[in-house]
Image 1 (cartoon, rainbow, N blue to C red):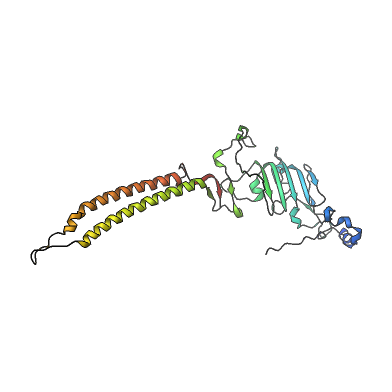
Image 2: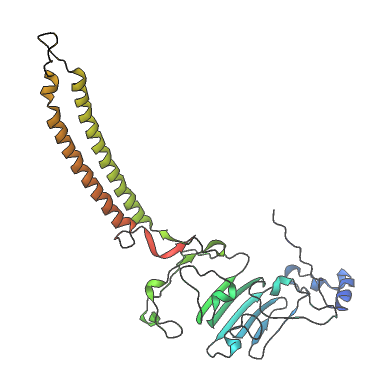
Length: 316
């Protein structure tokens, strides 16, 4: 069973405030219990706000930062490198997941930069960023995005809930979306949707198209039935021939002379019938082979009209 750390609001609090706060009698601070929406004093390190940023901060560890693309320190991110058109909105709660105390050993306040790996939860919107690098994401089939607008959501758990339906769309319909946010062309066939579990794209494979797969399996089933009939007809004919051989007799008018041919076998005309059987089986097997090749070209080749795999979407 997963063990969770119990948060202690006093842990890491600046002295002497920590002593004063913890020594207060409960009846003298009913408004600071945090219960029913009351205020709750917590030990929270401060945010290292830069001159280009406007910060909207809640009374606890919740922030909305309006500024330029910043993925870490004052030197990380497109906006921190002086690139224009790199505005960003960073919505974050729980910087460093509360693991950093409010002050250091000298009782000096600590200041934190954005930390995309350690912060508890974040919605990040940027006009120009290297989104995959900043969050340490695998490339997948979509590839590694650089110098693009992006939106990222990160938390311990993410739920997307809809009462009607959810669409994941990689190209918008209007003609105005024929270019990306940089004004560059969009290579339409390249981009799809990658479902990457565990951030590991080593075995990323195309998703199967269900309708095409059903059609393909039905077609394969018909081919198997055809093969069954070919084998069945062959066996029936072979059984007749075997019975004729089994029941044949030889009539000899004199002892020691060669026997006459079997009447039963002669009436069956084995060589002629075996030749006919061979011709029928050869034609049926050739037809069956052509059908199988056609099946493979139609359903199992990426150029086929009913290729069972998605051209764009992949998963592991």
